[in-house]
Image: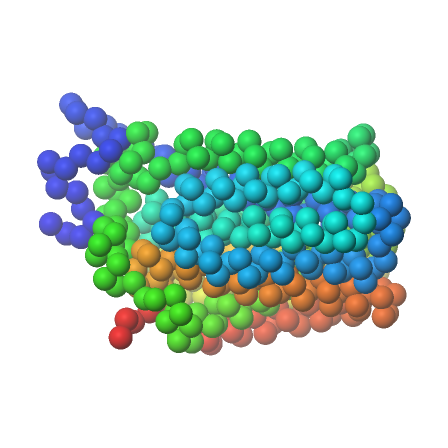
Length: 442
């Protein structure tokens, strides 16, 4: 029997007796739900960026302090990445994703009672702890539910939740702020996280354990999955967590994501303030025009994932199928620098949308890498957490650097030029440093 195929007399959970069933598509329900959870998380983390222009006077926050607050989320988020991937590999995505969503929902809602810099700082750091297992859980879900030929698009689907959440935060939060006040913006969006956690814990199971997944779908998943499903065999091949850091590819994944995140987190944190301060937009205009870059990123993200999977199905080497979206996406993302010198608001929004769209184009390939290079199923979430640690390094320094540069220069020209240059560096790292092949266990 070939590895990953089912014996005729084996019937995984979810299969029923009698005549063969059609192959179900539960995996797409699973990844859609993961994308919704990711979107809620990004609404919650972007909420403060939307609210800051309207609460800075209430809480007495100057631009430098705002940069510290926006950055503080990533201090704990980055540190918690390292143990969260290990926990996801051992406790599973069902438990860890649900626990994370409940945690971040509670501490998002608690921002409604913040009374100043100190309390807001503490709550944002607690929020960072709660959101740390998101991307390791998503990557684990893809490795369990999708064969290699579908992983790039599946990864682009859950990754589109990041752009959808960042984009939806603008209209949702501005409407809540306009109608009810900024406190209700945090209370309502926090409740969404708690409700999603209940739904995820109730619905999610592994393919063989899911009552809705047919035997045919399980066989399809396992037949195209190069990672060994059995825990005992996976354990034999697994690398120790600290040994992952011996590989150049792992460091390339980390540093490459530092570069990508430097642009992404401009949109998550400073983008609303940029629209108000540099482009003179009002609250209603932010809610309308601010979603355009996010929509572009979602569409381009799905396109990048589809292209990567198409290349794999057509027999293109996996390394090339991953690196084309990565390098093209990062180079396109550098167009954010041109927004700094765009004469009108329309041109600036268009350039920002193109930049964010290209970053989305790379997203599916980025999040396929942990499963592509993992020597074992028990290393997937750990690799994802290391990669996402790089993202949070970008998240820590990007808001701080932008805040300092805005305070020093009185505008956004220098920050956008610097961020654009960083994305070109990221393209070079993805092109020349990483190897898209399983890490060799010595």
